[in-house]
Length: 247
Length: 247
Image 1: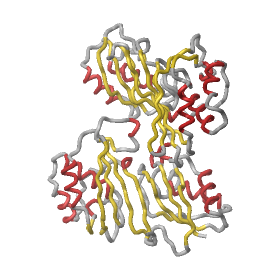
Image 2: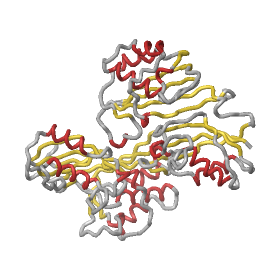
Image 3: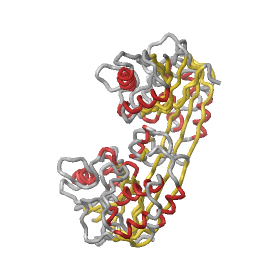
Image 4: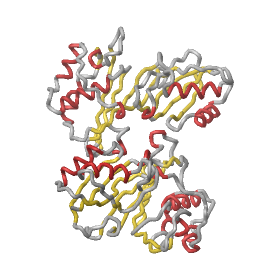
């Protein structure tokens, strides 16, 4: 039986999503619990994609196959009773055997949150403590360049080698609530450090170190700029994953 | 020179406010930094009161004397550059030598936050994960009994020995925002575990295990009930401390 689960996690105390020997990862923790539930037989967890160390998820999705038979509500209960406190499974569904949590992704939404007010130690792992006002008008203008299909190679971590860096961003929304700025990106896929580098660029632009058109220049040049402006991981959330068969 | 500071802290990784040998405490961390600023001479930090392990503060207040001369903005800068990331000094004022951060307290406000929605790992250290609906009508009724001057001995931690357990609660406010319940208590002083036990009692009442009048019974009996219902520390915030000389 194949199951699809929705997962919320606090990335603070993990070395990222992907399993790594001897390191505490989200995949590692969930697979340990799945093995326990699955009569001690190994289970592979296939997620919609990885998230980096310290990045959070409000709704990550992943599938896996169990050899045992179990009702979805029972499986949800079992998962949550064994999982550590910083991972929670919100939802468990049964899916067909040709469903794939990575290949079937239609759209993902990420959110990045910035505190423009004074430093707040209570938020330090959850909201980027920029602690200065941002020029929202300039930021909005710069973000508009991202909409559509682009080669995002210039925004991607140097250690991310791929054949194809083309992705489509369908929507960018910016919301201000008191001193917090929330920027959401919806698209067909995101690459390593892509959003954190985009945030880095809009901060350069907001600070007047670059013109708003700089965003467009990077997109068109496509060469890695090594600008070294990756915004902190703790402000980033995987917020939603949508699949092709969903309405 | 005597200084009064406002402090925000994330209590998660501290063994409470009060200095203890070999344990990481808020007072311990701040005094270490103050000594460094004060030419390596010891400085005593006198707070408005303690907070327990895991309890947070949005605005704790404390005073201390320095033998060196320093401008308030410089002192704020120095404190925040040396303090760990989970403590932040919001404000530094110079005060007269007869000001006392504990004795001069007029009023304190504490806030307790409860999640009535589904478990959220991102909030686990900051909001009590009760994860069930509460009966707000009953809770409001029960909380009304607290207003005024009462002997709170029955609500106090067994290890808290005092001559006087009489305190005045001036205001209790209850606010619901989506699935979150925020309850604020304003009064002339609060005892160890007092608010967390009050929360425990309102939960008993909400669940129908006790009548709303049970709150009044406990207040009138004054004997320690050892009900063992102390709500988790992570949902509690010291929110505000007001002094006599303030308008």
